[in-house]
Image (cartoon, rainbow, N blue to C red; front, side, top):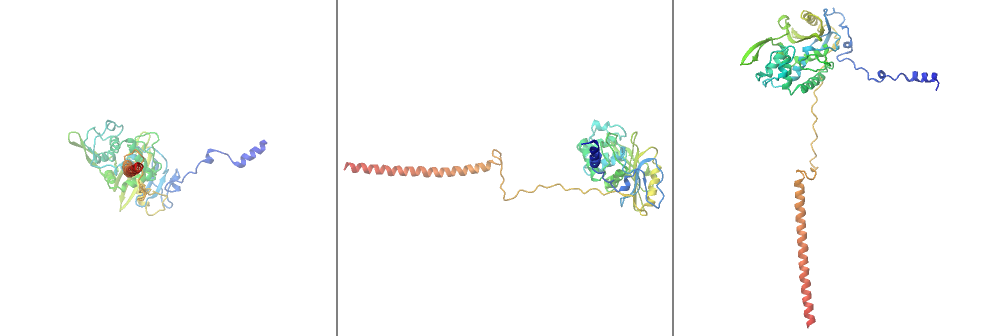
Length: 373
């Protein structure tokens, strides 16, 4: 084939590249507009106040409508806001009255801590308060241990994220401490917060301002909620703040006014966000019910019922391999029937043989007598 013909064939066939064979990119969860990295806001209303957050979402809790967003699905380190997923996952699984003895590993977790000791004086209820109020990384690990260990807890948390359709979220730690591969997004944090607000225990933990916490020798000390807006912003419910040097500032807040709740989630904030979040909440209360939403917080996926195995047919007798305990009654029964049959047949043969012998003996005696006569 000539060079010209070869080039023509390649042109007609098109380039065989990996991009051409790759599956199409799925649309962003919650709506196409949320795939934008820039500001997305409804028409006919002033833009939300400026913020140093790289990513944020403002949403209506009741309807799930996203009122405004910036880079909603941008993936960033979540820091301690990931503790919302830890709590939401483990609250239904753990008995809040269960007594827990934290391990040395739990007690020695780095970062923010509530000050656990390796003694059996803590209820699960205490640990959830420490998790959501004091952002205790030690409490996060102790709860993971109570759930059967770190591996099981991480699997449970990631399964819960998938159920919520928080597909930007990958949990690697129960505390939110930075770890390669761990991520979330402002959209996902809003989803998780919305699901958490529907849980009465979750809501109780995030809204508690101060609480007594167990200490050795049957004493207590007081812990307080790290969410400063519980004292500063009217109607504030919670939810969770977080910070690491790599993640920068992250925060999820929910507040209620006149029977309506607004959720604000921000990520990778480079400054002091405590003054900016109230302004974003105010904007949300002003916009809700008056504007066309730019997206939607989707509902969780339905929980699938476990598959039940079909019961065996009543007409089909159970068959077990020979040598097993289940097979022995069948074999013994068959053997007994075979033995009984053999005995009956044997008795008949022996009896018949004796009778034939007696007849033959009598016949011989008569012949001898006749020959003598």
